[in-house]
Amino acid sequence: MKELEELILEKGKVLDGNILKVDSFLNQQIDISMMKKMGIEFANHFRDKNIDRILTVESSGIAPAVFAAEELNCKCVFARKQKSLTLDDNIFHSTVYSFTKQVMKEIIVSKDYLKENENVLLIDDFLANGQACKGMIALCNQAGANVSGIGIVIEKSFQDGRKLLKEEGYDVFSLAKIKEFKDGKVIFEED
Ligand code: 5GP
Image (cartoon, rainbow, N blue to C red; front, side):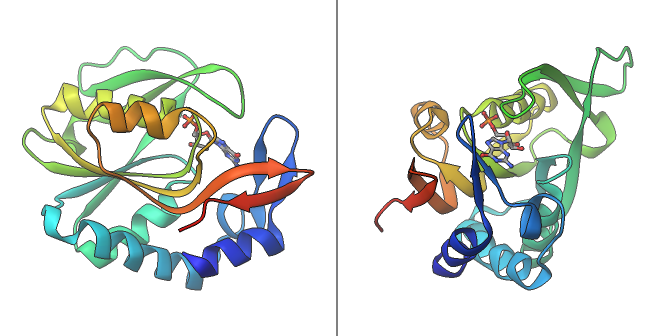
């Protein structure tokens, strides 16, 4: 998505540890007009998959997920992140290693909001090593829901996430694919 790439070049900051900071439009302040366009892109790619629900993880996945859900006219739910295991019969839970915080976190979603046989589209802001997506897949498996696709705003293609998810057969669709960070600059994959 050319417009997103331009915004990343204009506003993104490359930090140590292969982290891209995009607080000004995605991770803190939300660029509504860009979100709307991203929602349309996700919807165009996944429209024929009869998506019942979008699942994301709080907090930065929520904005793109909401706009995609509006376009796909489907339900939208976010998994909550917690520090420790919650004992509750009415939740699905999974453990995820956080790339940016470098700690294990539990992610949970209520059994009321993820149902057997639903076609679920996973959406997240970044794809690095695929741990957040793996955690969401585990939640869907517990529910007996089908993972119908994975939509990512910014993929760092030099990390392992895409390979891992593709090997498991998932349709991974990313709006911007970063090939590398070179001298503090973002280099995108060629189309
Ligand atoms: P993964 O689970 O694929 O290893 O990492 C993806 C998750 O870590 C995303 O949910 C995102 O919040 C966070 N993340 C990974 N890489 C970056 C990055 O370069 N910048 C930001 N802002 N978040 C990232």
